[in-house]
Length: 103
Length: 103
Image (cartoon, rainbow over all chains, first blue to last red; front, side):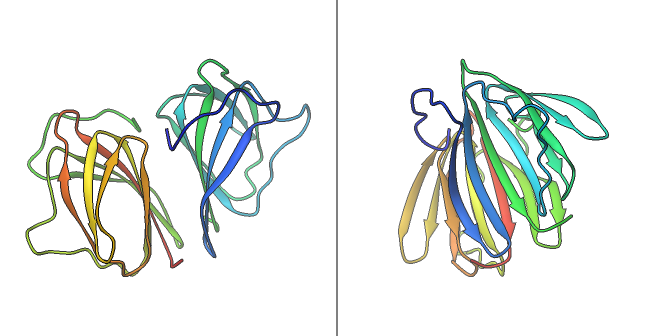
């Protein structure tokens, strides 16, 4: 999906697909990688993220654990703290992330 | 993908998934619909479009016919005139369209 998926890597693979003053589009491939223990993302821009393949779980501050299957998406408003608790490795988890200024 | 796909409809089905001052995200389902003969899209915002399922062909002014399969995407800058020449009906063509101010 969105191009060839390489063999598993130590770190997740992040590729920028499009970028502009009001947009950054990324494909992210994970093979079981998760956010470092105790770390949280706290982003100045909002993020809409779609799981294109595989399974994953996100922990979203204030709303708890959210399990995602292929085709599920979630909107993370700016400064909504979140972390990735799990990603599948077989098949790898493939994300489309759309970053944009605030909602 | 991105939720249930209904039975074929006369017109393509457009659903807004997220909207903000600098973003509009849509899922579009087509069952063979194309742009009206002689009509072209000419949009003030840029559009990044991903074909999530099915097959389609876009005609992009200046670069000609572009055949898309599931997983293919294309960036259409603001005012890049384009039209949909074909979409598959079995399976239906499912698009993710990301609209945003200029690139």
